[in-house]
Amino acid sequence: MYLQRRNFVKKSLTLGVSALAALEIGNAVASEKTTYLYQKNSFKLNYAPHFGMFENSAGKDLIDQLKFMANNGFTAIEDNGMRDRPKEIQDKIGQELVKLGMKMGVFVVNGDTAWSPTLTTGDKDSREKFLAACKNSVEVAKRTNAKWMTVVPGFFKHDLAMGYQTAHVIESLRRACDIFEPHGLVMVLEPLSDTPELFLRNSDQTFMICKAVNSPSCKLLFDIYHMQKNEGHLINNMNAAWDEIAYIQIGDNPGRNEPTSGEINYKNVFKNIYSKQFKGILGMEHGNSKSGKEGEMAVIEAYKASDSF
Image 1 (cartoon, rainbow, N blue to C red):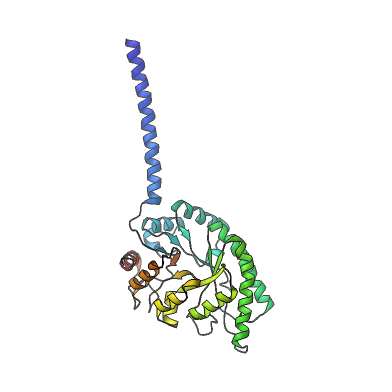
Image 2 (cartoon, rainbow, N blue to C red):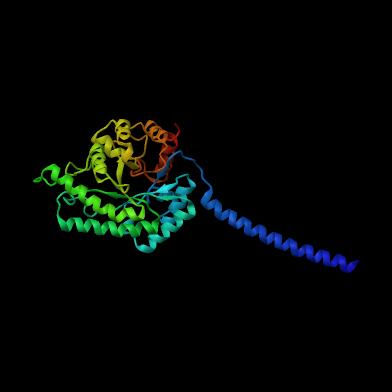
């Protein structure tokens, strides 16, 4: 009887230690998952902050910033300068996005040639430089799990008729599609308001070019801030171009800061986008109207308010 009791106690202690160890492991796993899965907010649309937007709250480390974004309910990120980051950083960001269940938004393909006459000219060297950037962008997209990339055709060529310039742009974009299509990647053309020298300035013009290129790899990036400045009638123009819109960016006007800081009724704009069952990304390509942690919290509150339609 004594031996049986001793064996029972021994087995019970062994089982107890094993159960305790399992519980500790389980708690550790749960704690790790909490870091990635706990969200303070739940948004209806896939809003994508950029690095630096929450630096005061999350610190300068890029991975810590990603975790902060995820914990606050953001399901995507965009990074215009991703193509210029070291490969090891691209890999690290891509791996963390997978862990967090976040999507990668746009990065810029041709930022170095977007601010001069390039694709509009028909110049062979300019086109080849652009196509080389497209090929490089495929590798960046693979490392970061990206699908969309921003392309800007460049400036007007003042001594060349618009029809010729448009044809040159279309031909270059068709060549780029030959690079992107096999990988399921999409370049999104962005009409801008930064200077009248830019060739691509309106949604209808971009819509027409996308139709002419006629590829799933060439679509329209509708930047609400720029289109408010260039053409207004945001919801009407967005609806008219909807078939070609693959990506949306956000910024209030004036100031190019978070929603509610300017004149745009973002609650109505977001409601319209949601009504179309848009599953893509809305890049938060804007600044913070207030500085420090207070300003960063104000950005989150602005999105909560504008998303409450």
